[in-house]
Image 1: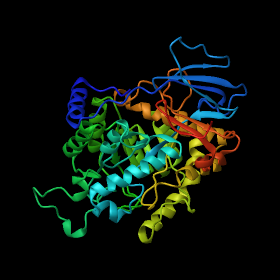
Image 2: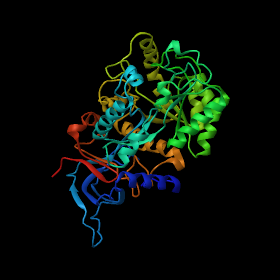
Image 3: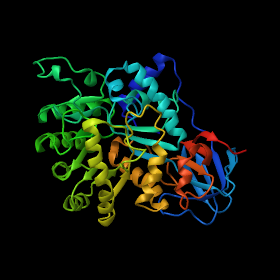
Image 4: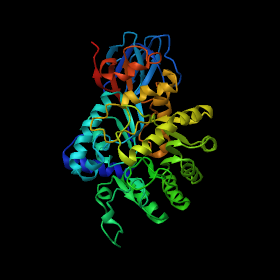
Length: 448
């Protein structure tokens, strides 16, 4: 259950009372019998079948023997039939509101439409087996609340809020006629609807970071280098200076959490690490010395399988040229990450596909280009769960995610087969995920 401060809890209670809504009841106990566990902590599923008891949204007991039940407990009993029970998948670089609409739509469409579209994407995401996502930029606070209150089915969202960008940076989508910005000019539309937050100078960065934390961000997202989709910045450009980066880190650390940065190049990544940034998003163009620095600093490397294939975000013109540079560096990035045993997280960063994020599972399966099936699943469960927990006091759960162990959150998938041997099973969730559970609530069950 989410830990709220007394003030926020009171505010939420007042709001719910005003709306006439009631708090959701605790999920009923569930007993899963005869399942082979992939617990996220190893790379293979267990040979011996087990039973798993789930109470109040968390895993209470795991045993190869029958689990004794309290006299008044009447759990729903589900026989797994010897299939694989694994943790729910986690996408560590997701954009809840930006995965589907094109860049033009995202910057011009009525924000109410984008929120409704995001609700559809959220439900599809959960039905693909992704029970948690780390939202790396965009106005996802409302969707997060709707999911938590049971108004919309979807994954658990750990939001970053608006992406903080410098002028001319990866998050600056203004048109040329809007520059120069007059003194006292109103915020751009993108800033008004909290997709981005343009900030120049340490004081502005500090303010924008604090605003996202005030709204409920679990971590802060900064644009520290050039990007593929942005209009003005070549991919080799380094963005923000040391004082600006440190301002964001200070704001996050004061709230017990951390900063993640978008960056591809060695210079941008090294400057971010020196400022205290804890998570590097992308980084496909870094050199080996920078990878060593990441490892020494204990930073996470949130890598995406960006290859020039049918799974890539569609790009044209200058963006296409930048996209090819990144895809060329992807193989080497994963090789360096493995060589130096970097803490690797998995994310998809799907943007502007016009779908409900349909390539999410296929992108995960494509990771077997560099890792064994069991290693891929470990990255998308345990590793990503550890990254989510980096939010410290802002981490919204009482137990860990991404693992099957007593006390963990009951985010579970029952797979018809052994995905640690055949990763292609993950690629067809509609057929192969017979059971999908989040917080102990069953959202899909194809078993008798």
